[in-house]
Image (cartoon, rainbow over all chains, first blue to last red; front, side, top):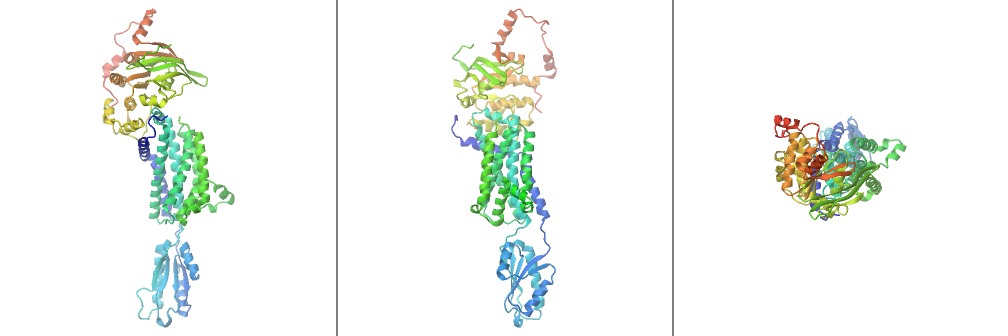
Length: 362
Length: 258
């Protein structure tokens, strides 16, 4: 069966060749890397949330005439959207990213001209708005305290509060990562392999004593490595655009690999069945397009009618996207992703069985 | 049908292959001696390629046996593939790799390191070492395909219609290459539908039609036996033909080296 036994050298040579073939194929690189990047940049630049007001919570522990006059002065600033939570609510709202700036007026503030600095809490999710807000508050305090001597240089001491910011970029990037994983698996295999089949390059491998299974393995390994690089690039660009990564990269890698396995298997099923690219293209598109728009890549699935939301919840890309978002946005670990991992696992098995049944070398 | 001889490197007996209703190969048997250039001639659809591919281990054999270098192909096709070199009809290679990378990759598939520059020099493709196959001309592609088939220093080289589609210069050049390969001690089995090519290159030829061998001998004996049956061409053989005129006018130099 194997005249040379298992040969790592052969696998390595085929792996290197597979990586080279991919990175030198401009269409493959464009569709699987640059297109997602471009989509991300366009949506990133659009910055769909772009709020114009600064949300500010004020806890007035002083509750004095002078503190109330400060609150009303702050209320008079149009840019502020002021609420009056209690201290605990305020901290929670800051962490959740619902508040950008929190202000605590300490008890006894301003009594007898004693203006100690105010404590401000800036949500890390809104570095710029919170900073501007603090500056505005600072200037108002100076106006109110005018006439008092011995004022500190700054009347507002700002403390950062790690906040979860669910901006659009945070929603978008995990979705784009999921989409890329799908596109890479589906298209690079469905097209690349069908082409090798059609031109006879695959047949030429049969003329050698090496089992084609080595080539199959090398192709899969090469695409898993390429997927990792792509995800790293997408995340890097996303972080540059303000994406916050709350989860750990190991969990992310597991989900990316599992997702890749599902779509690589689907790709091989298509490549195995199709005789040429013209047959492979419509099937690959038929599978990928609905998922691209219904699996929550660009828009949350909450907005869908109940029936559609329920059905699309079972799509493989939906599981991948949900898992990726939980990791990136909520810092979820693999243990809390049971349903998604189960969903992905079931799809992986289905796709693998399909691939094995449909795959033909010639 | 065939008598077994000790020096035979290929021994095919009663090979059969059926595709649906079509009996593509219908009881083919022959032997090829070591160091010989053996040709399989025949019109399209005669079963030449199928016969070749069964012997190469590229296609399963319905019935009959093929033994290559002492190994039964049906029993151990991979061991046979390790000892032979195959140039497929219209074979294609990975587009994104250059010639050197491809030869090195193919070397790995045989578990050996190859001297890619030497292999390319042997087929006069040194200048194309860093090019991709798709940029090569027809003749260059065929020569590269032969270089790739030689990476494992095969006992037998199989060439399936190596000169189909080539211009006369490139065809003659390839003939020279086949002769060199033979001089280096490789046995060569080729298919062709150019009689002239068979006459130039082959020590013996088998003529196939409808899945069967209908004649098998040296070109000279085949012609002799035909003449012996009283055959005479209607036209008197001219001392030169149009191809000679063409080559006289355009020269023997290869044209595919841009």
